[in-house]
Length: 295
Ligand SMILES: NC(=O)c1ccc[n+]([C@@H]2O[C@H](COP(=O)([O-])OP(=O)(O)OC[C@H]3O[C@@H](n4cnc5c(N)ncnc54)[C@H](OP(=O)(O)O)[C@@H]3O)[C@@H](O)[C@H]2O)c1
Image (tube, rainbow, N blue to C red):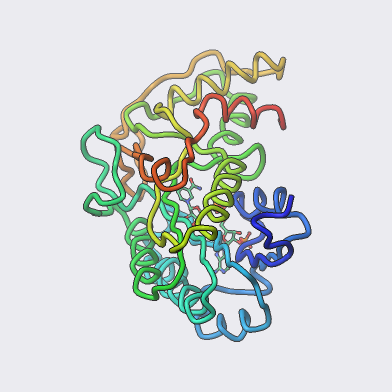
């Protein structure tokens, strides 16, 4: 499906990650994908010479340092990849006057309260990964030009390393699984994130003025990790996938120690996405059902 009359002209930075794979499914033949052999975001000085080899109509950056706990020890490296290098990519796009699509996270917020975060709410990351992603947001805005940053949450897919595939693995090997029940947000199916980002980009390109800015984009509705896990197991059972798990126990974040603190409130308000692009994201349960068809 050609997107916005821009066939074969996307440059996607990232190749092996889950969102990169989701874009690969949609953009078959319309995009070049740069994996780590072709581009290394730990080496910002080499980024421009690499990008200069291409003449894309738009750049989609799905590459990121995403090891949330490890980032506590490697904040400098995470900030080079998620901050400095992102700024260089944004500068390239601004100079060429081509749109940049980039991804950020609910981790830029403090996670307090229960209200879904709006794009304009104050940021206050709890961990190094969140700070590095916020740095990327700021560098893109400073570069100017045409850009869309989609802040998302809890991304998963039918394959790769994510919460869904972890539950599938644990559910086959353990009878009792402990899952955090006091962090609230929306799981986001990578395929939907890719699909609706492209739809937003297509609409943005057609607008008289490109609506550069930050947008919240996750599957709609709200849950917690424990409920999400139970829903996953229920659906796996419906598919007659053999499981060992008998009990899924909800625990508090304080009982599950991780190097990086996670936000309790990851809810994202998506009114701006609907207002500017008319996009209403599918509910997380419908998204899970769709994803499960691939398992
Ligand atoms: N996963 C989530 O729950 C979540 C939540 C909120 C926001 N996000 C954001 O969504 C975007 C996509 O995330 P994802 O879930 O697809 O992440 P992912 O599966 O961890 O993939 C990360 C990608 O970044 C690439 N990468 C890592 N270090 C690199 C480097 N030094 N140079 C070049 N490429 C590098 C990886 O390449 P290799 O395959 O070669 O390793 C991989 O393709 C990211 O911006 C992330 O911050 C994700």
